[in-house]
Length: 259
Length: 233
Ligand SMILES: Nc1nc2c(ncn2[C@@H]2O[C@H](COP(=O)(O)OP(=O)(O)OP(=O)(O)O)[C@@H](O)[C@H]2O)c(=O)[nH]1
Ligand SMILES: Nc1ncnc2c1ncn2[C@@H]1O[C@H](COP(=O)(O)OP(=O)(O)O)[C@@H](O)[C@H]1O
Ligand SMILES: [Mg+2]
Ligand SMILES: [Mg+2]
Ligand SMILES: [Zn+2]
Ligand SMILES: [Zn+2]
Picture 1 (cartoon, each protein chain N blue to C red):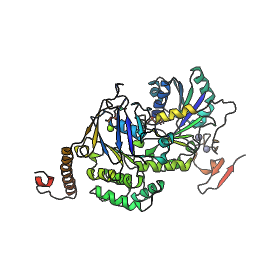
Picture 2 (picture 1 turned 90 degrees about the vertical axis):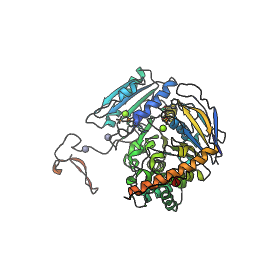
Picture 3 (picture 1 turned 180 degrees about the horizontal axis):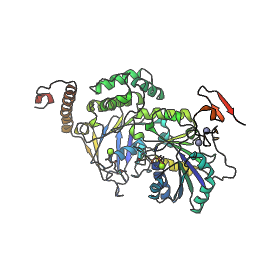
Picture 4 (picture 1 turned 180 degrees about the vertical axis):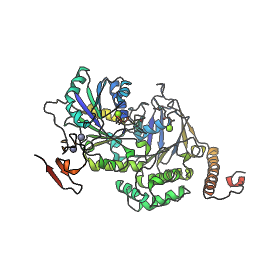
């Protein structure tokens, strides 16, 4: 069982020691990673994905339950503890959604019943219904992302989930993050989006390739996150209406939950 | 001389992964010499030159690049010795899916592109099935689920290989390849053998026949229904 992971700081792009020397993330916590483009957000996520042991250019070290993971833990693909989702990921396999999920469930030793569950869950995250007989490669960006999220939540079921900038995908991102964080996982989400950033418990601020500081989300920010989520919901439903050829009437500020 | 033979389809990321791995060996004062075998064209020498690794190019032209590489191994080793290198690294084009250039005691590395679809491992033949290490590249572009299926497919074809998931752009995973290179042993070519015998071949097309009509063909001939015969002396 994984209770927590610890990131032991290394060096930034200038070779200076990172200001954040050590940070521990516990089961059930959601951490954000924020910072300008090129500040090293994806690299930090990458270090965690490969459970780096001072062997990447940042020289960071990742501990699991306070200890160094074994070589076996790090390299045996069947023991993979980390699931990752990023924006430039696409489905390229030439098969149907159903066949693909069946194959993946088989790989993971998961039951075939999962397949229905994954599709149903994915459909709660996107406005465009996904069917099992759809070809994977024709799915829209939103459908693909929704399916990946549902797959990670149900079939992959890794205790650590890393998410890299999925905000522009046209999915209910607030719900997506809840689905992923739900099952007592360790979640890290790289984002520029306040809806997601303010939903996290803490956020690591990146600068010049190094972890600059860790900011805790305030209660005010959490409340604001709820409001932002409502705005997001309205945007998504407007998006569906436009797509369906509907004429949009006026919208009221109450719809956004803002007085 | 330790010999690392790296095969993989064009554009799979062989050079990208090697550049990161060789740079990391360089930092430990271990020197490499690279030979790139391709068919018609390559600019890989420039990419290796950037990290200061001596590189030689061999173009096999109308010959199978693997046959050409194997015939020239001895010369490559002497050249790497002259450079006082610790490793001879051979990057080959891997266009011929029936041959594999790995020798018994070299480190055989197959680089395979995860975006090429989950059936690719079943198609590429001996350069995957006889490799020690399969490096999967471009995993950053597909979902975790697809990566896992890809990995299973590789293990179906080669249950004993070690799989390294690497990213040729960021260098992720490439240090693991360098670690495996460190574990490889010296090779002497005197009694060295290939892992996989070169394919059943030799028909008149192989030696320059261009006429299509069946009646001109000699040698080992196989019909599409599988019936095989030998025509000739
Ligand atoms: N997204 C992504 N691109 C990669 C990765 N690895 C390599 N590439 C890109 O793929 C292209 C081909 O990479 P090379 O390293 O030249 O491939 P190669 O196998 O050496 O190619 P040849 O020598 O021509 O057969 C380059 O544009 C690389 O930047 C990776 O892990 N992810
Ligand atoms: N600690 C570090 N040391 C050296 N280079 C780094 C470090 N962190 C990031 N980089 C380099 O900086 C570049 C941008 O990093 P990246 O993680 O892609 O940023 P972001 O995801 O924030 O846009 C990459 O080329 C990466 O290799
Ligand atoms: Mg990034
Ligand atoms: Mg190359
Ligand atoms: Zn051949
Ligand atoms: Zn022939």
